[in-house]
Image (tube, rainbow, N blue to C red):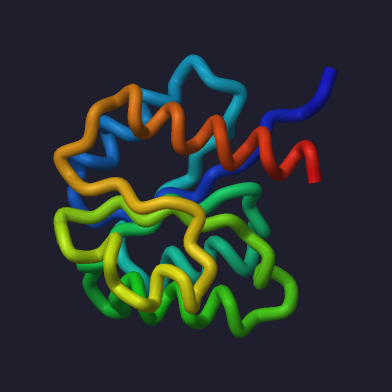
Length: 128
């Protein structure tokens, strides 16, 4: 049996964090959360997760800064990142392509959308 894959959720809104955890509860993923950018970045570097779900509007360090740091850190540079944000314009932001984002989900999102995005990233990383 293969071990669970790990997802780091960096989200400062408790409600959204609970929705994400609930949506993925029956999936074979270990979910670790941080509620600010700095703590999230430290978790990513320490855990080296299989996926990061990243909000953009975060205290202490915004999501774009976190993402830039992930992409600048050799040990986690290849970590897939899905942005989960209330900023509707984020999907068209040039940083999405420049910083190699897997997907962008705009809040409020459908639980099915989240599951599909996470499962797709996890399937691609297994196939790679």
